[in-house]
Length: 267
Image 1 (tube, rainbow, N blue to C red):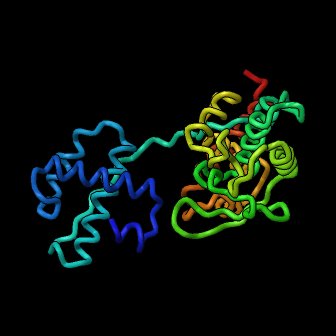
Image 2: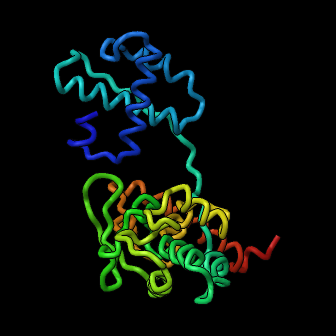
């Protein structure tokens, strides 16, 4: 676990999940993990129906045995392939859906409502993960850019912020009655929690904060942005992760042809 955290720089969420998965595997084995073989792994995984959970547990186990092999704790290296998960298009919202949802919030609103508006527009304008957004401090925003402490690893990235989101942030901060280094806070002037952020986006849009990240990426891809630029803005380590949005682009192109091509009118 120290190796994952320090050498690999995994996020706290990944660290906690891997630790939990490995403890669960060892409990299943009734013996030390180091004594397990591939048949033990398959027996353990055969209990798990959800493919995403299965693949995460398998990643934890494969990471452990890779570490053990490199440290000469085991003589034979084995790695089990992950289950294939059907590709599904990420859920996203249109710009008008997002703007209409916060249109009733104006300068006369309470600072809570102005915060909610600022958070929603900030998430859509930057595409930040919710954990990244909640860790943003006031001094991380400068000249229309936000400096992001990435959730995965210790890297940083810079992301521009649209003026409409910047204006919403200024309105919120002007009315906020307390001082805090964090941009988004609760009534006690403490950093806003993930649960509170989820409740905010659920209240106005009936979606999770992550859907706004998908909406950000989808808007850029459909607008013609280069996929590598989108990758950089999202903070994806691999372009493969970003390529899911090309499926949306293809669907959009298909819908356009079906709607406007003259042959589509013929039976």
